[in-house]
Image (cartoon, rainbow, N blue to C red; front, side, top):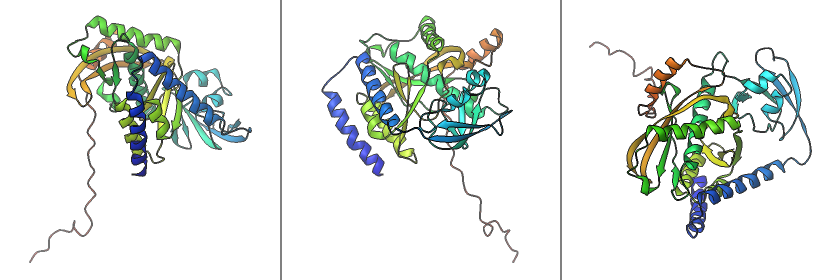
Length: 335
């Protein structure tokens, strides 16, 4: 409750300041980057002296391997660079003491480390992070796909299971585009935008921040400020996770994979209208992708793409009912 109240105070402060000015989308991206970089430097300065930590590796052929790394500076990717080129090129995410950990996030204590790849026997957690990353990539494309005369508001995209057949990104476009229906060529243009980001092999840089920092980052978006407030209240630590990819800063509800270059086949398949919502005309843009280590024949891809064109919906969380107590489960006694 205290976190939510503090968020509301900061949100009102930043919203009133942002309302006085209406900067261009390029200026907004620049300001978000500046706040991200400032906070990143502040966190790095928390470790002025080099302290060593022990990182015990887990995984095929790595059990028993011990690395001596730098506290607050070394990342799981740094550890991978002490191993082989395979680990550097194929690692997408990590487990640190059993907790999912972005590959570019510094290690802050001695720990056990498992590097995750798409070739693992059980890539479920990595697949979920990959789907989330594809959605983030799609949001980055949408935010820069239109002329600066048109506003683009990225909404809080729901978690869509991989089994649904498509990832998605919810968005509200400028009111001038409410009647616009994207053509197949428009979708191909969005696909080309995503493929350019994939070609540049950009890192998704993670940064865990206090809510007031995230509110400053998104001071020109009331929608994102509400999302910050919600994510902070849901977080056990009261923090939120930001990522930066190129000049694009985003909120994420979970870890992302290490870099855009891990995406291979990638296609934007549809943009569905969800009707009027609290922020305007809500749309759900969808896509399909496979990671670099997995490829599909063009006939299989065509079938997957047809499935990915259909509107996907988030899974409803079903409330679990507690099992009946032993007393209530006893059969009735005969009279």
